[in-house]
Length: 286
Image 1 (tube, rainbow, N blue to C red):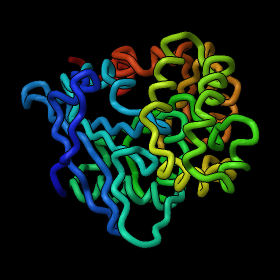
Image 2 (image 1 turned 90 degrees about the vertical axis):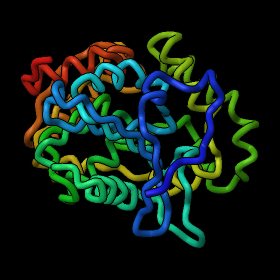
Image 3 (image 1 turned 180 degrees about the vertical axis):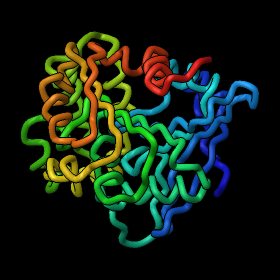
């Protein structure tokens, strides 16, 4: 594990980033993934580790309220996946498919020696694909996994999943207005969610996006959901246009050992309310 040398401009640093320890963990293929960690005070620690795997391109600002609330009594492990700007790829040819990203999660948890029977995993959107690989292929056995707005494939604007294979990465900047329009028009429940998604676009590293998207944009993972037998909670968001409740219910019905709850909005699932929901589900008293 190596210390991060990344620096963030002041306006980007969240409350959670101010209190977290930031490191990089080397994977078995030589690449390095960024993690953030905090430990609860001993007299307040509830015994669980709160593992957050954020969705496609999303970074800490979208989860700050949830993480700060969780830091009061959970140990926290936050892992950034391979499409993030923080990812440090190994030299030479590497894999960036779901199997590799699922293995990243396994290797980080095992490296840190976190007890899996006390692991509460939180995933959202694209990262539900990653955790589906982890659970279906028995890479980890967490106590509980929460799927927020799960998907069965990577959601992209029409035609983008085809033309991205032939266009140079610099054209990402030219097509960015199309992505902004698509997010605002079709995929946001309110201006707050739209702003969060547009922040993802602004912070994107197109080379890393393309390297991962090329490996995952055509894959549909219904079979992985059917193979999962771990305890899972699926959270739908009725007001969310990007992740419909109808799809969340369909995925819930594919998973053998799952429960379904409705939280209505994307904002609620990324807030302190989500942490309180996890506490209530685990029957934790602050």
